[in-house]
Image (tube, rainbow, N blue to C red; front, side, top):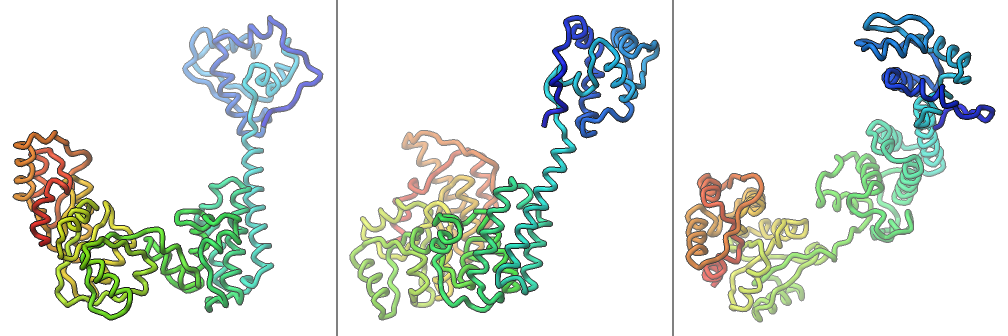
Length: 432
């Protein structure tokens, strides 16, 4: 915001401009500018300049019309303002600094305007809330207060904040037409609900500000904790009769032969018998019964190439692929297999991200490391070197393997990253 205008004032004449821009006044103008911008552009208060050198003392003496002889000078801004008005400058302190440039910024006015905008956001939110069925519910007050204290909305520009909080209130009112946590009379697809709220089917996607606000409201309505991971977020959506997208992400499998008689289980067995891989969606896993004989050993790999090779080689052992990361759909399948009494063996890449993923899977399912110990790594690294395989160094911080304290030191010593394909022939032997 610029300072006061000077419609009736011409530019500074050359002599005044030359004097006011002399190096001895640079520190003064910098300090005055900072004070004026904090003071609403008003020339009030006192400045104290210390450690003055000779050119600064000379320039200040001439400007203030009084001798400045010591290393410190005290400058009253009202006096400096009056001095400039009576001098060849012919204008006050703020107008002079504007002329010297750059334009002044009224930071106090900006702060006041921002505070007024924040007040307007919350006023609009409260008005919107009171116009819905949510107005009488105690959880909505806590929801709004949590948003205010959390600062998430105040970090947005006012237009975005107002839009998002209004959309969140209308979405929650749609989900809780009676204001409480009873099931909504209709089920919604998340994309359909997002389109209704924002005009975009992706408006409630994971990670959006709107989805976080709505999920916080759902959690408070059901008196439950705010979800911290994707499976918990999906579960919370379902409590409000909202169905997340459960078909776009899949888990790659091979050789699963459940014992039940449903068409889904029959289809899995037939695909396994014909050595065909199967991609399962979350939607399928919600309704699929995975009854395998207790103690069935399921191998888990990281790279889809292992599944492809197992299918080509007509291997029969059950195999699940994490595809580089244990996403929600992968964990959902492994959880179901664990609940059915299956045991797991895990193999992944010999690099630090691979060890991180292996730690996660092995710890969660008490899985057996599958050719993932220090001797396995050393054998594969030696074999790769003898075969003339180009050296691929490890990158990133080392990660200790929870199942073998000797593995990380061995990897650091050889400094060789080995992807899962390096052990493909050995893995296929085990899958026979």
